[in-house]
Image (cartoon, rainbow, N blue to C red; front, side, top):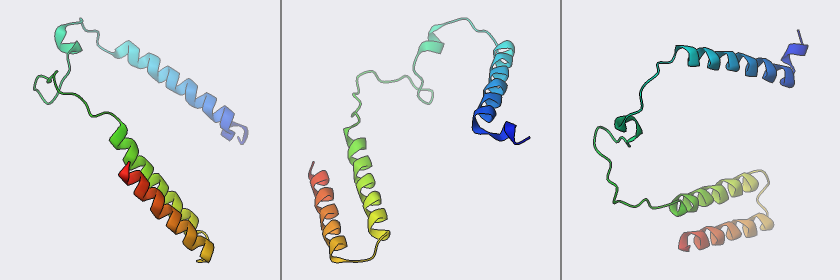
Length: 103
């Protein structure tokens, strides 16, 4: 019984069960004829506006880097005692967050 709980064997059993489930779902799924409604964009029952541009990923990455620097810095500072080196590290964190904020 321990053999079946090893990660490669458990993954194989899981993959086999998911394959069977996928094949069964294809068998019972309804077939539909392609039409314009199925291929059009949907937004809460309203027709999507084609003229508005998306802002891109830059704002997301700025926020992600901010939280990554802040959280990893707190983990590093929290894992050690408060020493002069930790104070210098905190100042480095502050400067890097300010530089990231100024962009």
